[in-house]
Image (tube, rainbow, N blue to C red; front, side):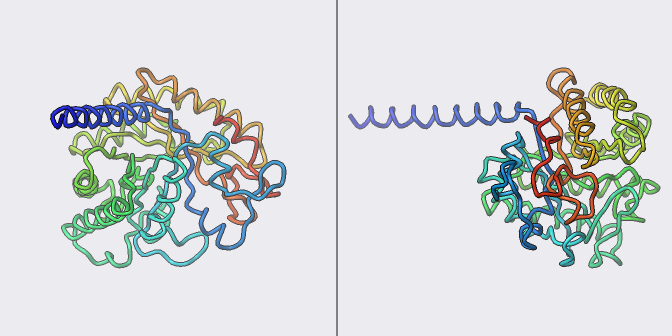
Length: 341
């Protein structure tokens, strides 16, 4: 009898493991419909009221989920200020938001800027605490910060599916030491971040992120150099903002599609549009742009186009000053977000 019970329990354990692996694989194959929502907690803290289409107050994250969003992207800064727009996103705040999103069934991407505030193609400022550090120290800083944040997340019960090492880095990060003028040093920083991610959990996918996803020449230049420098990563992340290049999406969507396919073929990496946005007051155009972007990523052969993430869709302009959100002045989601449904 004891043997029968033991065998039965072993079968149950085996089935549970198989089902868990199967569910994990199935989830990995689900197209990512994401939102970067770093401002959301501060919007709530300052009293911003998110409303459903019928005017009913509702959790902003739930409103996004209702429109098909299944993933969130959370930026993390090293020692941020308390400024409502340019600050927050500390380790502790990022952990709290990730826990909340995961409880709603969301998949999680963590985006390391390696700065105290915004890092992008125009600026890649080192954290103040790292300002006078040597290259060797900066390499260790990147490792320690990445490992510390991800360990805090894991302790809280959240293991992100993806981690970005750097945000929009066509010119490198941690300037000047990590500039693309010093590619060998940039490669050391990127690999240090990669190693820290894998030390926390080898299944987390590491993203390297460049802007202007329609600019194939820029991507080839950057990722050819990364290949030459033996940079380690799993996914190529792209931004796509027709607004910033001052062209309608119809003029560039073909270039984005071609670049997505080229990246997969040339480097044998999966691709994801990790930032996209359209003008909040041009609802139909933004809707159409989103539909076209989603389709371009879905059209990448062999499911190697992983998904599309909208940058701060809930960041309504009267609160943020940002014109590329997907939220209306009355506190309601823009119909443009229905492109994700």
